[in-house]
Image (cartoon, rainbow, N blue to C red; front, side):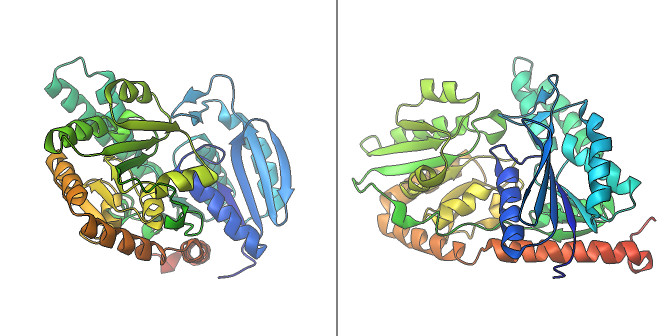
Length: 401
């Protein structure tokens, strides 16, 4: 890694509460520990500049007409008004490479100014917006005939994905969270694509944080309580467990906020809703789980899965999206092809506590090899590769410059 490389970073999520923001802050910690020159341009509650050691920040306020995208994430159609200010800051900072994280307002400014200044651009894919959009539309139009909704959402998903592929042709290199997306992005954009996984803090998330030992089987979920996370399946699983094991002592620990929380609270009988948690409270909640249930079909990676592993908690995940690539079947958890699989594996591990304990131990061991330092070492290698390709376009057989 070239420690003199100057990086301008444009995260679409930074102050929000989601996996992209968490990963962005981990990158900041990595940079700060190494005293690397770094500019972070992000949306904030006010517009202004600040500095923390080698890291410079430019916070940009969104306008009153910003549109809600998620719990605390918005898109501002007037965000381009900040372009001149950002341009002045980039000219002053003199970055060697620019990094965007998606298709929202902050990254759009970054991509445009990278082109304007002829800077090498790296793009990382964090969110499957095409699948998120399809799930939300399906939820919105659920009163229509099922076939009509499926046809409409399928068409919309394909169009959003096509637009995303066009957008991601701008970066010189792309970072993808799993091999399935890596191959799709390479094929769809023609750009060189590298794998960028995630690390986990194995001190913050650890089995030693557990505070319960009453014999209750605790199923857990951590994340946004929204339709695209398929969280209503948790209620279906609760009902199935009641039928299969009517005398079993169990409960669900559900961590997070979202517009599905009210429905879940009204329809689940064995659930504790903690709301949003962080710090030691979050660590304790994870450690008190026995099995992590993640029904989402849209997550590109799933940071919460690795946090569960670090806490000594095996997982049940779907066969769609990124979490399946982190799951060693029978060792760290199970990949479920359908709802019946979720029920089968949940009941199996309830009945066989020795097997559950073995998987818990292996999940913890698995997490110990997933360090953030190794993740960001490879990200900086990607920055160097992007700089090289900008200076030597003939070495990139995909180059169109």
